[in-house]
Amino acid sequence: MSEAKPSLDVVTGPEASAPVAWWQHAVVYQIYPRSFQDSNGDGVGDLPGITQRLDYLRWLGVDAIWISPIYPSPMADFGYDVTDYTGIEPMFGTLHDFDHLVEEAHRRHLKVILDYVPNHTSIEHPWFQESRSSRDHPKRDWYLWKDPGVETSNVETSDVETSRPDGGPPTNWVSNFGGHAWSLDPQTGQYYYHAYLPEQPDLNWRNPAVQEAMFDALRFWLDRGVDGFRVDALRQMIKDDQWRDNPPSDEGPTSQNPYDALKPLYTTDRPEVMDLVRKMRRILDEYGARTGMPRVLIGELYLRIERLVAYYGEDGEGCQLPFNFHLISTPWKAPVIADLIQRYEAALPPHGWPNWVLGNHDQHRLATRLGAAQTRIAAMLLLTLRGTPTLYYGDEIGMPDVPIPEGRVQDPWEKRVPGRGLGRDPERTPMQWDNTKGAGFTTEVPWLPLADDFEQRNVAVQRKDHDSILSLYHRLIQLRRRTSALHRGAYDWVKSQGHVLAYQRSAEDQAYLIVLNLGDQPAAWNVEGTGKVAVGTHRQREGEGFSGTVTLAPNEGVVVRMG
Ligand code: NOJ
Image (cartoon, rainbow, N blue to C red; front, side, top):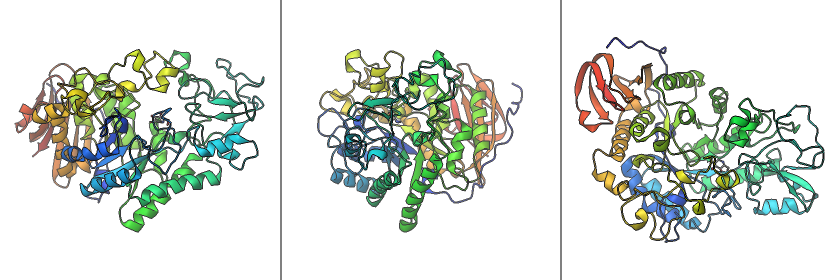
């Protein structure tokens, strides 16, 4: 095979010897609390359940857990509709259970990151109940209320339903979950705005009283020792103050998702969002300075790279980790991923620390998107790229999407826009711990069905099997933890050739080469020098020395210690 041509220039990184904060070298693990571990036999996971499983997480080697919302909620959107920002949903436990979880996690050197849901409350939140009670209520302005159809707009949206000025919704804005984003409240004759469900009214973040109340919620949890927040729907927090219609998108009606019919120009990523990010960050930094333990601000931001990196802030006063979801949406092809890494690295501001995500509770499972053979490659990629990786529970045992029978659908999105594959239940099914009835998740009927294959695919079976994907995750995480080239090193280069993606990372005098075959044919990669396989997707390769050429089976990847 001929010498691989560099398809990309050298990619630079920061000085590998610079000190890094815990959230930079950490591996973050997302827990969807309803589905992790049920401790009281109601078929729904809970906080004591998470505490029971901390030893597993410690064994796996992750450094931080991010827990999806655990606040009191009527569960219209499974916790992303909050009625009290400083309480615990009884289904999940009590504040005492929460404190115990934080204490036990910290005892094991695991950080705890909470989900913060600032864009909207539940319709049942007392603030909204007061706000809707009359047009004169002092909390009226805590939400976004508008008269029917009186706003005018000069933006042509002929393809899109606008329904004004006959008393319909004030703008053409659509909900992320389908349908109008405005609902009429008959009692006061005005519409309120909701970026998601009508049961999730958006807060008015231009109101300083809203800001103060919501910042107090951050302080409440920081006082209880939490190590950071993942901020939900961050790009949605401010809407256009001129209430302009969104223009039609280029994709138009071809998309499966009705939300994509419009460009969310006036409803997302408004310039003023960054002011709020700065304020949140300042609060976290105050706590960090006071306690000597930095707190992390993670932003949920589905944005193109150029806009995403703006959330680091010009001087690093924004999110430390604006979630980078691009590996989820990018075609799984070696040159495309090499190009993505390059573009992302090039776009990062000097102080910007990269991060990568391969799955979460809103996306189809990795194993379903890529197929079983590539899930090992994906694990190796995620855990060897520069920057903080976030794992989604269950991906470490290769859980695929679980088909949900019609009668058991839970997700409101699937209920509102059925049959288009938008529903998120398949990726939220219970964690498969062992082969007992209930998969070790519950002793009763789980809230979502278990995968048919849980008796074979579970933590207990895979922990004993050195060739399992779980064992691979374990080895990769352990290697990453002890290897500075991997947890903080720079890229020497990133290249692709055919279906092979390769990069080399180094720190101090260590260099590690990663070669991943994204194709289903054997491949080879030529390198200068010699090395030894440290971790392989195919375990029998580990320890193998090579010189000149690395040969790879279909879907095989290796991490090689050079020299
Ligand atoms: C993003 C969350 O990840 C998703 O699960 C939720 O439905 C929406 N934001 C609304 O909070």
